[in-house]
Image (cartoon, rainbow, N blue to C red; front, side, top):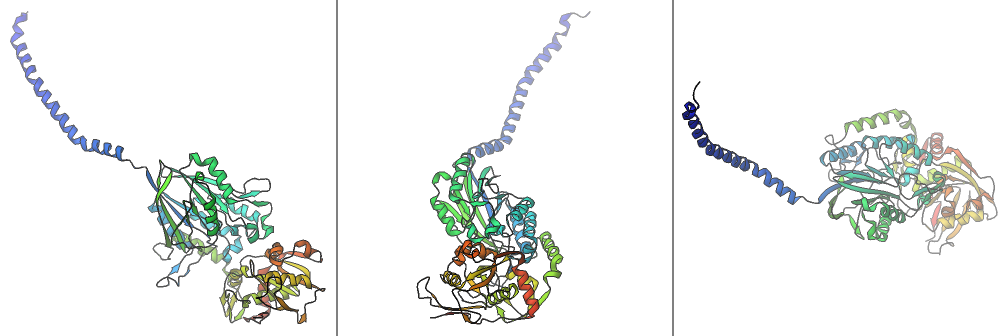
Length: 539
């Protein structure tokens, strides 16, 4: 057995080597740590810089449109250089899709009146416009007055078909229940944004009363204040989507208290093409024209800590049609939709000699003379009546197609037949001669002269019915559209009770104005666009 001392030299050598290695290893570790720190220092400094430099500002974009009114096909923009095609569903969808792709914080908003204006909408009672919007679903859609033009039951069905939120805070049932949801809360870019919808308070004056059954319209400002007071604490930004018109939006903004927290009003109804946004009472107001020919883009820098807009910009984007930006899918959808109804719409039903114009301020329009005469003839009455606001388009001949009548007279009103005394007809004419609200046109059966310099109520000078002086005591037969009948007090100066007292009144629910006009054109073949002087000013 080897003695223990025999291994001491080897052990000593190992101890000496260990003592030598320790400083070397320490040096090596220090070098490695230094290198690691040097390599990591940019990352550490970047984290420190970012953590101390995080901005509380978030930019959010609102892409908005109002009053599209079924303008599904592009038109020539004569006001732009080169007269390019502008608008239409294919171009509009292309711009919306492209801007959504570029901006993750973009919110797509529609401020009402998608319906009414093209025969594709009239024939489908608005379904085609919902189909289109479902292809580019808005984040928020506020109801407009034209959404009610096919009746409230039809609108409920269209809302069921919509794949996007529909809002309006100041429409209630008679029991006080909201007609649709009053608001939505949309989250984007770390922000909670409250959208409240409102509609024009005079809805009953501009929509046929029969199409608004069991609906109550309340003050939009009061509804805005109610919902902002309930929800404001959890909200970073508040946007009112209004279909009330620019002047009403200004009024609403001016009467909202600061604690309401409303930041923006995105408007519609008045068709204002606003090159600059307005600020009223600290609230930004904007609107983008009509017919989808322009999109509005409002960019807002929002301070998340203070929950307020610190900077904004507004611009109008013309929806110029071109192959690069248009949406092929939407273009195909429209083509198929139009092809399905083309045989009916393209049918030539007569010829027009001259032009159906709509001269602003004119006492007579040739197209109105035609329409009122057709009502007189087809309804077998003494006098036919139509309103200026119901005639939406001019036309040149020579061919008249079914689609022309749908586009000129898009509302599809049923007819009402009733009786008035000669004295009541005088009241009706005098009410019309105030020249406020709905201006009226009368058929060839009634001819009159008036003095515009006389005070209201005393302007009528002479009146004849089928060549004979108007007899105050005689009862005459008349026919008009449901819209005017529903607003008889404001349009005629006569209540329903006054009129019904004469007996033999009837709502002809199965007789539509467009059908009467088409039937009259087919029967006559040739329509001469004449103005025959049935109304004359004594000036």
